[in-house]
Length: 273
Length: 254
Image (tube, rainbow over all chains, first blue to last red; front, side, top):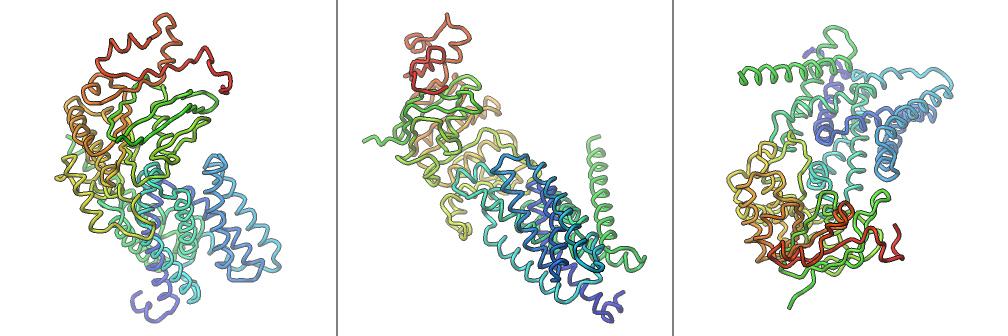
C-alpha cells in the first residue's frame, strides 16, 4: 500500500483526510465524552442528512448543504432542550428522524439518480476529492482556533456548569457554540466514516484516551493520535481485504475499545485478589 | 463603618407552585460570619441560589453588594454542597482551582501567571499544596471539599457562600474546615448554609434559622418562640418564623 500511496492520488487524499479528520475528532470528541453528549452528536449527524438532500436538490456540493443544516440542527436541539423545556432526548429524536426524512424527500424530488448517497451514509474516504480536502482543512482550523480561544470557558462548562454560570460565564452561549463545533466536526467525519457511523468516531478514541489522561488537553492529543491510528489502520485493512473503509475503521476502533476495557477489568480483578 | 453586603426584603420563592421561602427579610453586614440553619427542605439551598442569581425570587427584593444577585461574580466566591462530577474527568486539582479565576477574566484571555499564583496561594490556604497535581477524581471527600473552597478563594472574593461544607466529611475534617473558615472571616464576609447546628455555633457570629414554620406545622403545640430558642442557643439568634398557616399578609400570593 505504501508504494500505491505515492502512485494514486485518491490514496494520498484518503490519508490526508484521515489525518485532518482525526484532529477535529480528538478535540471535539473529548468534549463530547466528558459532557456525555454523544447522542446529541448523533442527532446532529443524522439531521445533517437533510442537508445532503438539500445539496442534491439545489445541485451544489452536498457539503455546502450540510454545513448550514447541521449548524441549524445544533442550535435548535440545544435551544429546545435548554430553553423550551423539551426533554433533551425528545428534541434529539425528533430532529434525528425529521432531518433524515427531509433528506429522503429532497433527494426524491431531485430528478435523476443520486450517485454516491451511500458514501454519505457510511463514508467512503477513498473518494474524497481535493476540494473537500481543502474544506476539511479550513473547518479543522476553525475548530482548533475556537477551542483554543475559549478553552477555559469550555472546560468550565464541561466540569461544573453551575459554577461557570455563577462566575458570569455565558453558559448557554458556550454550550451552543460547542454544539456548533460538533456540527462542523460531523461535516468533516461524514466524509471519512459517514453520517451513521460518526457517533462512534466521536466517542471511542476520546473514551479510550480519557482512561490515560490527566488533563483535557492531554486527552485531546491522545484521542487525536488514536483516531489517526484507527483511521489509517482501518483504511489499510479495508484496502487489503476489500472492505468498506468507514465500517472497517469503526469495527477496528470498537474492537480496541472493548479490548482496553477487558484488559482493565482483568488487571483490576487480578490486583483485587 | 459597616457596609451592608446582603439585603433581603420580603423575599418569597415558589418552586413548582410550592412556597419554599416566604416573606424572608434579613441583612448581612461586611465582616459577618453568618450560619443559615434549618431542616432539610427548609429552603437553605434555595436561599443560596437566590443570592447567587441562579434562582429568581417570586416576589420581594434581594441585593448583593447593592446590586441584583449574580451581577458581581468577581466579588462572590461559591462553594457548592457536593459536586456531582464525573470521577473520570481528566482534571488536576490545580486546574480545578484555576477555574475560580474565570470570573475575573474576559472570554479571550487565558489564565496568566498571576492567576496561577493566586490559585497556588488558595491551595496553600486550604493546606492542599502537595496535591496540586493530583487528579481530582482521586481525592477524598475532605480533600475535594477543600479543593472547592480553594477554587472559591482563588478569585479573592469579598463574600464567601458555602452550601453544607461539612456534610460529607469526617468529624476531624469538619473541625479543620471550621478552623479554616475561622481564619478566613478576618478577610471576608461568610454565609454558610448547614444543618449542623452543633459545631457551627462555636464559630459564627450569628445564626439565621430558616423555615421554622415547617416545624410549627408539624407540631403546633410545641411552637418555638424567641425566648425558647434563645435559651437553647447561647448566642444571638435571628428567629424567622414563617407564618405558614396564618397567612399574615393577604397580599402575598400562595
